[in-house]
Image 1 (spheres, rainbow, N blue to C red):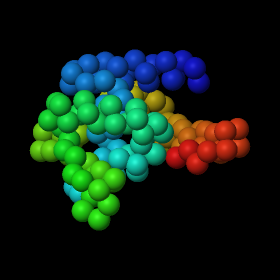
Image 2: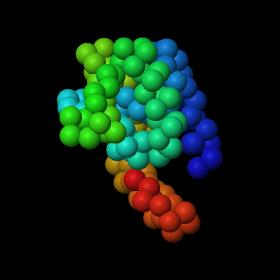
Image 3: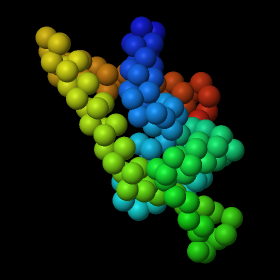
Length: 139
């Protein structure tokens, strides 16, 4: 497992380097809906980051022109973020790169369906253990 995690981190770092953004910024881009918006609170929850950390990540994405912030019309303390056209384009490119990479990996396997099913079980087990060990809703 450690080796898979290490390789996955290397893939993330190489992939994001091609786009000139950090891994955290790319994950944030992938968590924002393609259309519509998401509150900063929801985004920090999805990213499992403190709100102050998520704010810094969002600041960097705003500076790069990938997202925009909109104050909530009902509650001025709330902020909504949405992808810009450049953000949607980058999100699509990152998703396509990951999809192509993992399709190539699966093509190297004898029985990719078994591996995918096993990985889905591992992902579910990680959620269960995180909930038990840390008492958190980790999804």
